[in-house]
Image 1 (cartoon, one colour):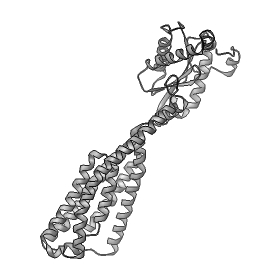
Image 2 (image 1 turned 60 degrees about the vertical axis):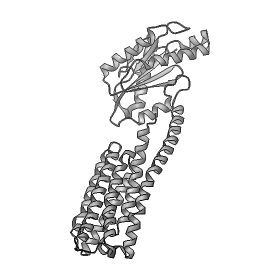
Image 3 (image 1 turned 90 degrees about the horizontal axis):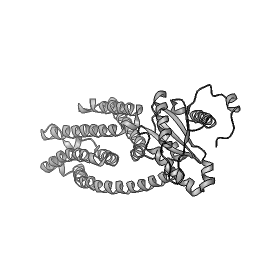
Amino acid sequence: MINDKHHKINILIPATYRLLIVTIISSLIFITLFTHISTPFELHAFQPISIFLTNSFLLIYLRFDPKKRVNQVIKIYGYILLIVSVLNTLYYTTRAWQGEMSFIENFPPISGMTILTMTLIMLMIPEKLNKLIILTWTLNALPVLLLLATHPEELQTPRGYDLLFLFGPASLLVLLIIPYQRSLKSHMDKIHFDLKNSREEADRDFLTDVFNRRGLNSWLNELEDNSQISIMLIDIDHFKSINDKFGHDIGDHVLIEFASRLRTVYHGTHALARWGGEEFIVVIVNSTRDKIQIVSEMFRTALSQLPYKEVGKITASIGVSQVNSIDGFSTMVKEADTALYIAKNHGRDQVVMYTGSLTKDLLSDLAPEKN
């Protein structure tokens, strides 16, 4: 089953990687320039290095667990942008207020880059964090606008007018992005909702509304790589005779009721799918052999204890695999199928756990028919 959060994170991860890498490269360029070209400002001695180190750390931090850390990394990046950009603006405006320098001549031409970066982050972060971007822009724009308003000699220059329009109308553009972001988010959510419904329909068995094989495979792909699983293959005993005696419509009703009972047995992390015909598969996550034995008996009892509408008592045979890593899914299906074969040929209505002693030689001595 497709998970909304999982889908959005998969979009955010590569975008965040690119944002961090571009920031790191930009800071390296500044470090190189300020190493070979002298600058009278103390800020240039440590700010590019600080940006390089913090973003390199974020890149490494994200690398180890991207899915869980990407939102946290974006948030931290936003706070770094707030601190660095505001510190830079206050440094130059304060010294200009004190008459120690000409603001217009010395303020670095990074305002456009700051706007672009904030716009990108605004589109990436959750809407609830837009206040962080608005605060960042306000703390950058207000000191510059106040300085220009009170220093006509700074304002009445080409650079002064450029900064006035950049920090003035550009502020309105930042505010306009917010409703656009909401509209875009609403539109993307609708598209994703429709896509999710289509995929879910494709991942479900049309009769019993449990997973089909495709849906089970999607569910397995969302599990953690280190997950341990065990498999139960569950087969309705003598299902062919039910179809022959009562008809296929009644047989379909039995399958629906059978699947409904399967849903009620176990409430831990697991998946239920129709494997084919009257055979179902249950995948139990992070359990133990002893617990699997108990759970398997719970399934058998729940399926057989009460009579079914229109056909009366029905039993089920269950084959259970060993507990293993998720990479061994195909092998575990074969193990469960072997155990199910033994259960069907040793009287049905029972659970058989797979062991190495269930050899091909033993199987060849048993009756070949499951049903």
